[in-house]
Structures are given as structure tokens and as C-alpha cells.
Length: 276
Image 1 (cartoon, rainbow, N blue to C red):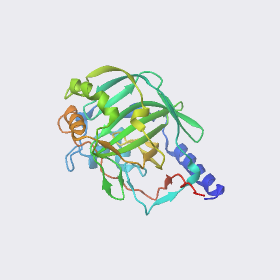
Image 2 (cartoon, rainbow, N blue to C red):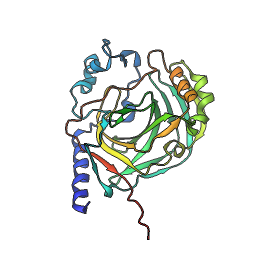
Image 3 (spheres, rainbow, N blue to C red):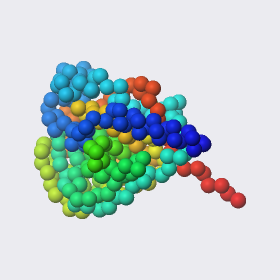
Image 4 (cartoon, rainbow, N blue to C red):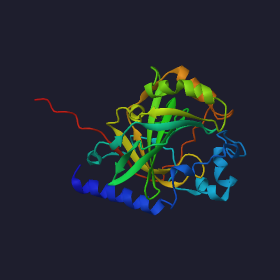
């Protein structure tokens, strides 16, 4: 792809982010009151009605750039000049928290950052959804990890990593004893010492990029999404630990797919090496 095409895509992403990002649209906006919403289709507080529960959650219903979405090959545009992910993660002190609707690892020290369009987004926390929220060509995976980052201007960028049942996930393996400690104990927090986010991300050569939102109320838009194309593995045992740890009724904590509404989905894929 020619350089002019890259500039057009990059400019569009920047303009879209500026137009939709709300001051204070930060990772911490995710609601802590999970009893007020559910993932049960058709329920009074189910995902179709999140926008009616509170005035400040209206975007969940009215927003035109909501997440998650299906990453369909029919919509994807290959953009080689996006380049490899520019991240500089490091091991840092962290704690694990049962938020009721999900399990979160919160970094209490400097865990590094992700740079997008010359803006640094500091890694704040990671959490899991089972099954996955994003799909690829209509396929839903067994689990999705979200690495949530925040910039100095309170803008949010999230990396999503998809999993299928298979070999154990090394990042989760280290957390297994703590998952048992906080199981079904909403609000419980345990210090877990030094955690290396590089173990969570793993290889991330190819990825999708689009503009979306938080996937829990208040569904704030202006979030830059990066979904890693390479699928990781997680054991059935680890998946069960995560499901049993959350509050009853949140074992399946994936928001339904949202309308794309003509948004661009970009894909970075390394060029194959040429053999002499």
C-alpha cells in the first residue's frame, strides 16, 4: 500500500478518536456496580437494555461506535504501514481483584505502555471475558483477555487477545492460587507481587485495529481497539477457575456483537520473507 493511503487511514483514526473521545473517558469508567446490569439476553437489565438503566449509560443504546464487533475478512483493509505494535512493557507490582462481573489484575506500579500515533497509553489493568467478545469471521472463541491502557489525556486503548481450549496459559498459571482465594468473593483483592504483562501478550505480530467503545457500561466510545490475530490457548481447568471466580450469573460475561456502522477495520500483517 502506498504511503498516501497510510496517511489517510491514520488521519481518519486520529480524527475519529478526537471526535468521539469524551473527557475523562478512562479505563476506570467501567462500572463497579455489576448487580445493576447483566449479560442475560431479554432480562430487564440485560445487554439490550443497558442504555435504559441509567442516563449516563445511554451510549450503550445510542452509540454508533460500540464494541465488540465481528472482524470479518469482507470488511478488513490490509494496512502494512501500521507497523508492528510499539509497546514497552515491564514487570510491575500488581493485585488481583474480583469485580463480580469479571476478574481484574490491576498494576500498581509502572507496567509500561503502548504507543499509537505518537501517543503513549500506559498499561492500567487486564481482565478476562468468557467466551470471547470479539469474533473473527463469525467465530466466537473460548476466552478473551483485555489489556486496558490509558493516556495522559484520559483516552483509552485496549488490546484484545483471543483463546481456544488447549494447552495451559502461562500467564494464568501463575495466578491460579489467587483465583482460588478470591473465588465468588466480590470486592476481594489480593496482592500478587511482581507480574510481567509480556507473558500475557505473547507474540502479537498481526493484529486488527478499529475505533470502538468499552464493552461494559457506560460503553464510552473513542476507544482504540487492537485485537491480536494469533489465537492463544487456555486449559479447561483455567477456564473453569475464571468462571467459578466471578459472581453467580456472570460466568458468561461477553457482550453481544454490535453493529459496525461502516467503520473501518484495518489489519497489519507482516510481509512474508522473500527467499533468494
